[in-house]
Amino acid sequence: MKKFRIFIAIDRQTKFLFLEAFILLGWARILKSIRFSKIADSLGEQMMETSFDTNESNKKIIRHISDSINIMSRHTIWESMCLVKAIAAMKMLERRKIESTLYLGTAKDESGKMIAHAWLRTGPYYITGFEVMERFTVVKKFAKKISK
Image (cartoon, rainbow, N blue to C red):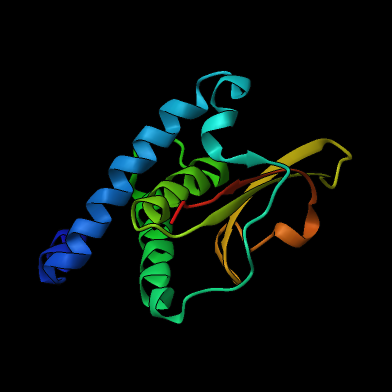
């Protein structure tokens, strides 16, 4: 009930951003269930990166997208981990004509088992997955460039 009251109290624009994040997290989860080779081309140019420069006027919306993805991923009934969050955030940025780069990395956990992680960057800002990205070696990257 407390969460519902908080949701009612937030402004309309934020509600729509949360709804968009929720829907795109679901869409990204469906994509994750498809063989990766079939969806790779839709993620952008392989082994390329977008610029580390950014339009400062986008800084606020970038922050809102990052927050909405990270908040809503905790409230889905499906798994919304790193790759799902990165794909959903990439789509939200793309809808606003903001370029981004999705990174896939691997590492070994404490027991020596291979693990994977995904994170998303736009300009100099990391949107998702930044909390542990330093532990991983980049093995693939996808640049979602926006044609002007």
